Length: 424
Ligand code: ATP
Image: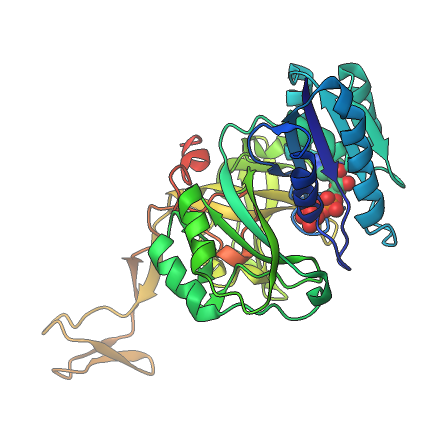
């Protein structure tokens, strides 16, 4: 019998990680049942407010004998009871078991959880309809992610190898030799990516929280990911590690929409015209984008750093394709930019001093007249309209790796442009 196990919402900023619990369970259950493939780490809607970090849920599937299924279920519930961070008010674990082939209704539910907002009640109803067994701890919000992870059609995927710490090191600074990460990355990039930020010269594989993860190594090639792991020098003991299959960096969250259709917590790709000049507040850069159905505020927030310079180069009237998540910022619905592509740029004109009509030299302003720097010719100050080059290219601009959503596909990977180009 096929048994799918979904787990979510076991962690808090104070500790734990659902992947850690999942990795322990995967090892434990593999002793009594046959795992079908690797465990899967499924990232769901990145815009919902309840998430601790990356809105990840864990799912694993086993071929299990009928008589061991009760033991497997008891083991899962026991681990969640023992390890979830129940103290934190925003931790509301949910566990779902589903036996047999995944039905269409569950697939559809899963894509809704990825792209929209759903309630605990809706998840309960879908679970009952498809015959899934669910267990709620506290509010049990985790059943949304657990059920969605089971139904997730993981057609495109990448890998992440998660390396875990010994419990006595939880909460202390992570000790990993930075130079070894740079060396490993040089050799493996882009088959394994996001290991370092070469511009800031920082290591990206180590998280910063109190969770049990020592490092996460991502890639599209399993062998390279494993080889990066072997080349990195860990300067504290590695408790164990687990390779996950994941929908990270697939752009699966993005759906093409009209601006008028955008709702809170959507992730979408839209095409529209820049409606006015950009403005800045608190180092965030904003502008408005419109199409025939409506207008939305678009933001490049401070953590996107240099990406904001490209946004500042947009002019009213420019036509762009923009991808991102819809959130509320200061009470206004705002598209949080992940990528954009300039489709059609308006000409940029500026008033400039003319060249010297006698010798072609550069003119200098002298009060209300102009004087040629080369031949001294003088003429009344009359500026001329000149078209100046636009500094934006015909290419997709993306946020830097440390500001990128887990689901967003970096341009360096094949297919990183697809979701944008669909709207061309
Ligand atoms: P980590 O990445 O470290 O595992 P997290 O960011 O995944 O942490 P969770 O603790 O899993 O955060 O919390 C996310 C919660 O939001 C879960 O309870 C999940 O069921 C719920 N959830 C996920 N997607 C949606 C959605 N589309 N609508 C409503 N609730 C959702």
